[in-house]
Amino acid sequence: MILDKEVLRDRLDRLIWEIEEARIKRSEHLIVQLVVVSKYTESENIRTLYELGQRAFGENQVQQLEKRVNELNDLPIAWHQIGTLQTNKINKLIDLEPFLLQSLDSIKLANELNKRLEKKDKTMDALLQINSSYEESKSGVKPEEAVDIYQEIKERFNRINLKGVMTIGAHSKDESKIRKSFERTYNIFEKLQKDGAKICSMGMSGDFKIAIESGSNMVRIGSYLFREP
Ligand SMILES: *Cc1c(COP(=O)(O)O)cnc(C)c1O
Image 1 (cartoon, rainbow, N blue to C red):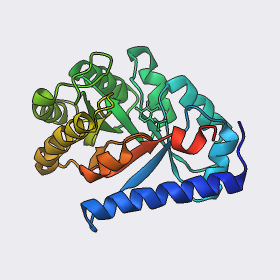
Image 2 (image 1 turned 90 degrees about the vertical axis):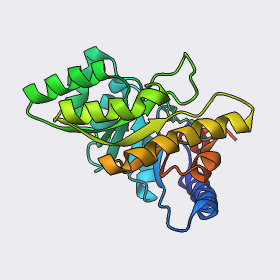
Image 3 (image 1 turned 30 degrees about the vertical axis):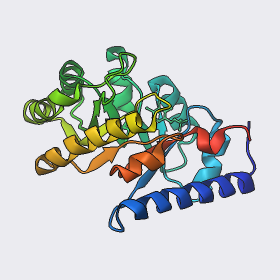
């Protein structure tokens, strides 16, 4: 559904206000970046949000990202790849030159990505995805292995610039479980700051306030903006 500019303006304003409230609760010094996840919506709505000042957008499939980049190539958007990256899509992703790959989820993938970046003489900024809720359906490295894997990727793969960590909150109605998965990720992020980690990406439409209260400095929000009222 293509949404009116005024509708999107209201929703974006409300979202930014709610992010602001959660941020102040955590710390006045915390800065939270908003990545709008556009996977469920039309390119027209992305264009409207761009006109309203939004610059960072995320897609979870490389194919979809390619379509967006082509349709919106007149706009200098910072595109984030947020979904699982399959090996056979690595070359395509490199060619699209994303602003940030948020879903680097194994040493094996890092190895493949690094090889192909080398061949193309390019680099890529990335976040290490952590499976902070230990859910089998989710990608990401185990929390207790995350620090070692982060350091190994940093040492071995010089074409990948690790910028921090990303997680998806626990799939649960129990708020304490969700909070725990975010706190677990934030603790890892804190340990990795000496290795240059700057971004802690956590929080989606249903749980971004808990994520920010737990220290997130990047939220990825889709349905909050685009769902039918
Ligand atoms: C879809 C998606 C989001 C956004 O989810 P909403 O609940 O629609 O805000 C965030 N992160 C990832 C990895 C996603 O796949």
